[in-house]
Image (cartoon, rainbow over all chains, first blue to last red; front, side, top):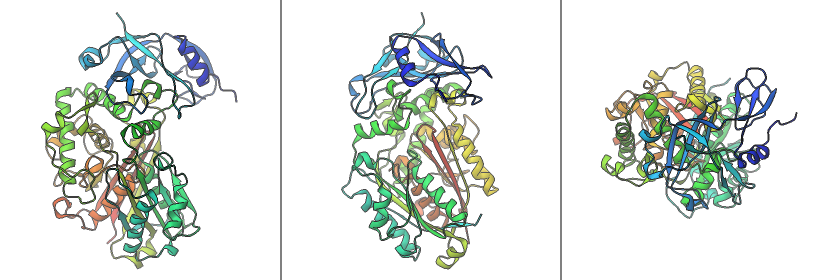
Length: 138
Length: 392
């Protein structure tokens, strides 16, 4: 069966600041990042659509210890965003001082996608990867 | 299904970097388990081994075959299990299933890991492989970062102000260190007070160094047998009366279910239902405290405390020996250590010895009859629970 939206297609779009997802023709649920089937009803009847890239911060952390090869990135903020279309998505938050990333400052706050951070890849990663990247909505 | 018992257990000391190979570590634990079972290598019909990162730590794949031959279990079917930090529990559960089903009568199971030998940078990189490598690792996710995000979410979801939650999390670590002090197998044996926890290095906000378990080297092994065989080998068989296992995809896909981990709740229900037992029947629990916040989340999903209240339970001693349920009297992953491929078998090792009344008096749960293990792989990708009961 044909895979509707591959990692490669999703990542290439993300690099262009376009967040692609899948809409279930059966139950209407939006799935992102892409899968073979709807994340709720497991139907393979999906159509690709572009999401708005906006949502609210559900949780976050300022990471001070990175994996081997990524030490130069710290400190950085990782977050889980609830997109306006429903799904939660992991990404990075920029434009906020990581040292000042507190619950009061960030929890529940509105965010929108910005220029995508690219992990260039390492010897284990089979190439690069794009991280959905957000800034606070002003 | 036939009744299956743990008839013998063995475990190395869990430690920091050390020079014995994985095969050597497992051999030490396995031969102890065989000796305790009054069995010889030729009595073992199959090996079920947890090992996650042998490929990276020693350049050794297929650890199971080398481990089997090394101890004289020549040519037995040998399987290796990889379910991140729950690998050994997956191995033990499968070993149980093969004996319960009637295919084998006596098998060896357990696990081994040299996570400490890898050093923190490579260990952090390889542990991050248990998150979604395509869609979540590009963000720089690490294991502390996963549980750090769950801590903030827990604070918000249950209305526990972060400073109070931090104290509750510290109470978890302090209790684990207290018990580990008396466990000669433990990796980190030192007294650590709340002030030390709260002033330790900030790894990933709000998780500090003493909220985190260490990377450990170590091995654990168990011999499982049918009830009929077990009765001939030991006067104290420990029966596996309930098991459960469930899986889940990437962290973000668990959405509003977080900070609870759905796989744990499904797995625990399977184990309780199979055993015909309830959370209030459990005397002792070895749960997956890879981070202090993970203990709070686990204890609630296992049914010991209401959602959002387990931190207070720890502060009040309800999760300690003499409380409602004795949690991690071994010192847990925090103090006893976390050699990931061996951890779940180490939990069963602890419960079996607790039920037999054989641990150090300072941390013995007097009269314990029923124990529960809880092992978490990745950020919820694999969950395994097992319930063990005295057979005498």
